[in-house]
Image (cartoon, rainbow, N blue to C red; front, side):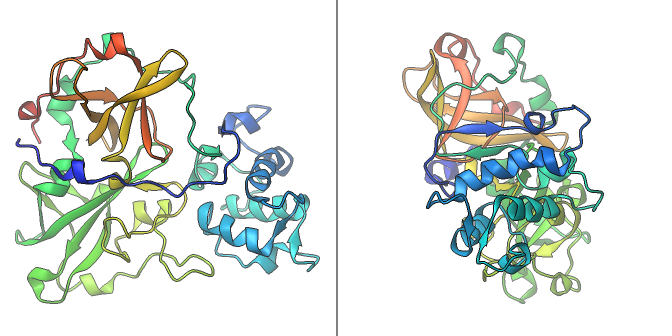
Length: 359
C-alpha cells in the first residue's frame, strides 16, 4: 500500500486543562474495598479531585462560572447548574457537587458507580497539563513484539481516511471516511463518513458504529442509504452550548448525523477522541526518567475492534529510515504521544512494511 502525507499535515491537540500538578487517577484508586463498585463515599475522593481541578479561585466551591467550564470539559452533564445547587446560593459545596456528579455517573440508578459507568466519563481522569515524567504502566517488551498479527488482521486508519471508498449496501460509492472515533480504553467506537454528494442532497456527516462497518480490501460498506440518511438525529446537545457532542454510548450504538466537517470541528464528549487527535502528534521515547523527542505519529492500526499499535515515523538518527509500529499503551490527549521504550530498545525494532498488510 502506498502511504500518503496526510499525517504530516495533522497536528491536532486536545483542550488544555488548568495548570495543576499532574496526577493520574484510575478506578482502582477509589475502589478501596476492591468490589468493583464505588459508593457515594468512595466517589467523594474522585469528585474532590475534580473540585480541585476546576476551583480556579480556590474558595473550595464550584461557582456557576466554573461549572460551565467543567460541564464543557468533563461533561456534558445535560443538567443545569441549578439542579445541583440545592440551597440556591449560586455555588456548589463539596457535598452538593459530589451528589450531583455521582448522580450523573450512576447511569443505572443503583446507587453505585461501576467501571463501565466510570469509563463513560473518561475512564482515567488526568489532572493538570502535560506530564513529562515516565509512568509505571505494564507494557509489552519489544523483544516479545511481533508484526505478524498486524499484517494479517490489522486495519490502517490512515488507509481508511485517505484511500478507502465508502459504499452503500447496494454496491454503489456513497462517500468517504472522514474520521474514526475511539473510547478511552482504545476501543473503536465509530467511523465518521461524509455521504450525500453522490445523491445530490449535499454533504452530510454521519457517525456509524464500528460493528456496523464492513471493511474490505478496497472499500468500506456501511448501512446508510439515500432513503435513510435524512432520518438520523444529531448527537446530544451539551447544556448551554450550541455544539453537538459525540458521546461514547451513542457513538457505539446509533447511526447519527454529526455536526462540523467530521474532521477537526467534530466535537466529542467525555471518553471519546478522534483519530486526527493523535495522528500527527509528536512522539517521544524514554530517556532515563523523562522523555525525549523521537518523531511523529503517522498511523493507528486497528485489530479486533481496538487499537493494537501506533505507527511512528522516526526522526533522522533513530535506526533505519521508515515507519515503526509500537504496541498501543493508551492516549490521554495533549501535544505528545509517549512511547515507553528507551533508545536501545527502539533501535532494535524492524521497520513496518505496509506492503505486507492484508487490508
